[in-house]
Image (cartoon, rainbow, N blue to C red; front, top):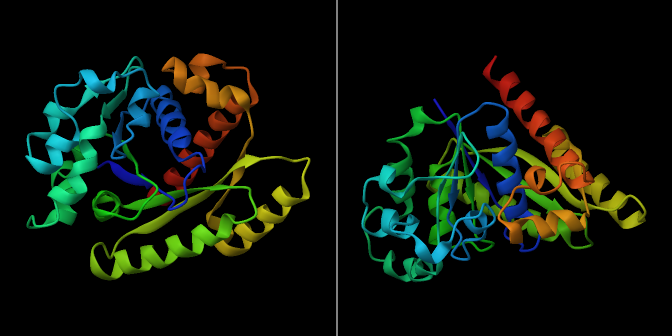
Amino acid sequence: MGKIISIVNQKGGVAKTTTSINLSAAVASLGHKVLLVDIDPQGNACSGLGIEKEELNYTIYDLLLDEIDIKTTIIPTYQSNLFVIPSNSNLVGAQVELINEMGREYRLKKALDNILNEYDYIFIDCPPTLGILTLNALAASHSVLIPIQCEFYALDGVSELNNTLTLIKKNLNPNLEIEGALLTMYDSRTNLSSDVVKEVVSFFKEKTYKTMIPRNVRLSEAPSHGLAIYDYDSECIGARSYKEFSLEFLEKCNKEKV
């Protein structure tokens, strides 16, 4: 059975979508069948993999609102083993349109349950707000992966998110767990980054990944070319770091299965 993991943080600009794209691509390249669900109205996860957002027949909007067959919305990427449920700006209206719908928080879970055995990992790239879209993702997930930027207010958003996860477990998904916390935009030259690392490790303890993603210009350039970082510049420090992270991620997942 596949594992569903939401990549989420209520703060924006923490490398959430960068992590969604590059973790998905790396895990797929290692032989696992992966589905990336883009549930952010900006649609950056699918465009970061070269998918034209405005030329789609069906998106996650149709899945959530019209409850069409989920397989109709899944499209392949340029990389074998990696598939996407895309999003575009149509999804903006979904937050209002779903308000009066029955079982609105479980629309995504209901759909993903039908294909759970067909994928090894399903990653959900969430918007940086707590609305009905993020609630759908969290209700459907087995765990959450939290990217945390090495900046001064990093833990402000984390404590907010922790409160949110407590409410989700109480009201929507009692089995939801924290997969891990990933430190991003790390700069070894600054005391601030080191201080944030200490705070995050103190907060998440063994749930903090040892791999840290450094600041890297090539990481920010890759999405504009519609490529994961390994296909854009496999030798840059960003590519090496995400590859190392993907291996650590898989190792932890395999230990949990034993």
